[in-house]
Length: 375
Ligand SMILES: Nc1ncnc2c1ncn2[C@@H]1O[C@H](COP(=O)(O)OP(=O)(O)OP(=O)(O)O)[C@@H](O)[C@H]1O
Ligand SMILES: [Mg+2]
Image 1: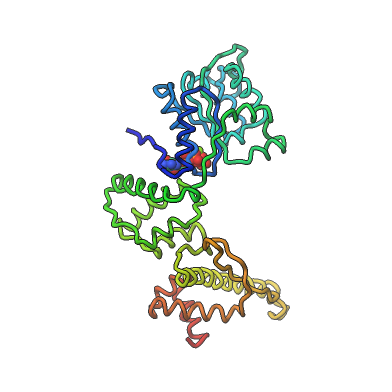
Image 2 (image 1 turned 180 degrees about the vertical axis):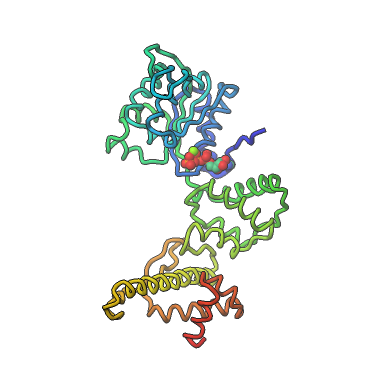
């Protein structure tokens, strides 16, 4: 049987949201769900449907942003045979299929203006026509729409009809981003660990206390979806192994370069600097490649004329939560590079392979630099 997602969470914000959702579920009122990407808009829409009198009828999700503009109208309202090239058969649209059930219109802000006119009429009267037909059809579909866009801006820019917007938000439910849900993050982790242990037949050894702290402090730009994907990849790639901040950070840093996540200020700064240094080294390599290329192209000019101007380098520093940083000027690139290599070597106890890996450079480059800096 397909897993039916529930709204995991006990924070005040989520509890209030569930309460409100249960209240509107009992009615047929149109609902507009607003929330960042991956925050659980579809989960909330299903929750409303499952707790409504329509629970035994269809729940039809439609992603308005994923359907090409030219066919969205026929997908939503259906079409008659021969209505357009390729319409070899007449076909029911989603509104007809959702009759007596619920239609969930995701990314509603992407709906083209022409379709919005027809849609407003469906909301008001339930009536519409299939594309290529003049016969009026009636659908008793409950409408739930969702968006992660600023709809006020879309209305102001005349990309979304004002009358439709106000009609849609008879009830507006705001889903808080995951970073504002406190310990719900851990409940979700537990839930996903359980799910993926079963799915992949893995026994998970758990997170270290430091790693848990990282999970709590990470800003989760992709919200619950990002957390779910992270847990699955951690369990599968690490084969259920105990997760330390170092392992975790490797998985998160890919999505969030230059950001350090561990609370321990000393360690935090070290990890942060390692990432910055490795990026500086990469940048230097790239600048050097470009310089060589330019020299090759403009070989009549001496190389000194092609040197880039001296731009001050700034290193981000930990902000309040360790994610936003302010700029601080540093010394020369060579100094930074030398220091970073020395530190990385120390951290990796002289192991060149590990050091090169940590710095994101090849072992050969590392040997070259050790020699050049006399380390
Ligand atoms: N509170 C929650 N409890 C359990 N799982 C959740 C919760 N919120 C979201 N999820 C899971 O996170 C993933 C993303 O959720 P969903 O598709 O509802 O997000 P969305 O806001 O619709 O995303 P998008 O903006 O991309 O449309 C899904 O796998 C869903 O099951
Ligand atoms: Mg969605």
